Amino acid sequence: MSENISTPQQQTENGSTQTVDKGWIDRYFLISERGSTIRRELLAGATTFLAMVYSVIVVPNMLGAAGFDQSAVFIATCLVAAFGSLLMGMWAKLPMAIGCAISLTAFTAFSLVLGQGVSIPVALGAVFLMGVVFTAITVTGLRQWILTNLPSGIAHGTGIGIGLFLLLIAANGVGLVVQNPHAGLPVALGDFTSFPVMMSVLGLAAIIGLEKKQVTGGILLVIIAISILGLIFDPAVTYHGLFALPSFGGENSLIASMDIMGAMSPLVLPSVLALVMTAIFDATGTIRAVAGQANLLDDKGNIINGGKALTADSVSSIFSGFVGGSPAAVYIESATGTAAGGKTGLTAVVVGLAFLLLLFLSPISYLVPSYATAPALMYVGLLMLSNVSKLDFSDLVGALAGLVCAVFIVLTSNIVTGIMLGFVCLVGGRVIAGEWKQLNMGTVIITIALVAFYAGGWAI
Image (cartoon, rainbow, N blue to C red; front, side):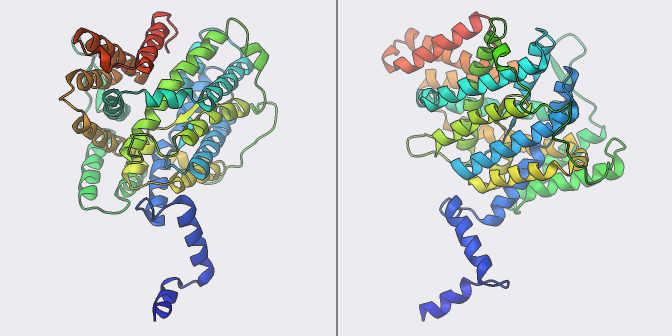
């Protein structure tokens, strides 16, 4: 009797072949095991893609200002996001998308090329070399050691701080919060009646309401709806066509153009080390925060498949240097996908495939304005503030050090700075409070390394 009942359940309207494929996908990505569904993972992937698609505009613009060919950088940006996200999804099986890091892109363009006068091939060689060193550090277990020795208060504080950082980035990007032109505090309310601000606020309210009602794909629906409204009412959002064939060759191609020997010169090596140090704590903290937000931590608080995730992240920078992009990292926008229900590598695979498709559909990227994705980023930022409840205030030093980390991430707009100040307050607080026995050697070593990094003037 059980066979007669189960057979129809294993079949679909299209036949048994589709059922086998679906079963394989579910088993490979552990979708049911992690309490998700294929449909939810697909929606989560689409949500993450739309939240980070701005990178194909921002990264080429930044590097273009330093003399890079923008079309070549566009191709590189898509390839890096595709390669890194597919590697993360297929190998590490985690819902984290990788792309060219905006902060490290700014350093590459404005400090390395424009500031130091380094040539573009040498700059790409520095990115490639940074990826090699970063991968070596990851493979040897140093990054995992840092995660293991990351105190729980600092770990939760990093998540809180990144949440606040996301709120600031999104609000500033649409003009809701602007630089204060007058004396006093550095920020002020922007033009509340502007179209981008109104769309962002209404979009945030819509997402909160839809998520409360547990509408599947609510975040994605809001992004699409606001994009359509923007196309109708915002003159800045225009239709540029649908298809555009990419050009991988030619004299402007950046693929395999890096100068590794030039990057090993004494003048450039300090910048390579600065990139490595920043990536170690910035990208590692982001991965930990996204994994925590998605509840992808084991009973010891370690990231599930953490070693593979860290390696996928670092190897992507090697690939980026080869194809002509900036250093790669896990995007904090991945949290929009996990907020939409993504829990497996299928989410990241969808992102990777979408960026491959974008190579041929580049005009579509201009149809998603910043105010369409800002509500999703603000919503995720708000969700990440729930890490406050995970702080153990019976351990006052640990909890307050975590809050120091969180607050200074957003006040300095720098994740590594917040982590450094959090470690300093933790170690100093433990010593002064007579709790030095609660410190382990790993925490002390990390603190000394971070302080030396900043005291030496190598911080980005």
